[in-house]
Amino acid sequence: MHIYEKDIARVCHEANRAYCAAIGDNSQVPWDEAPEWQRTSAIAGVMAIKADPNRNSEQSHESWLEHKKNDGWTYGPVKDPVKKEHPCFVPYNELPIEQRMKDHLFNAIAKTLLATME
Image (cartoon, rainbow, N blue to C red; front, side, top):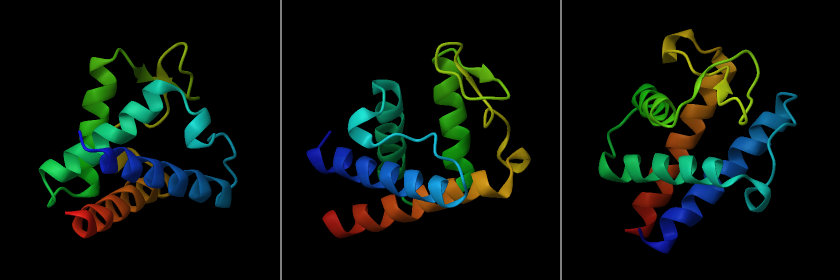
């Protein structure tokens, strides 16, 4: 992994945090305070987009789901890292529009920054 992939993941995370705050979700913490599993997940998302720049938001979500499933996560009504439960642990088409927008935002930022840094 090149250092810039981690930097891109940080930018995506912070954009996601700002978006969440804008829609009234203040549960996201800054990158430097985020747990390792959350940072690793963001880096994996950037790496997947780097490997397949044509990947769309739905494909990114499905990869995220697979990553979470392999790590023992399941659906839960509230995100709980101790229980490894997440309300977005559903197929993409079942996500609320606000959650799908987070995938679009992540993809757009990652693709843009990857393209400018290669």
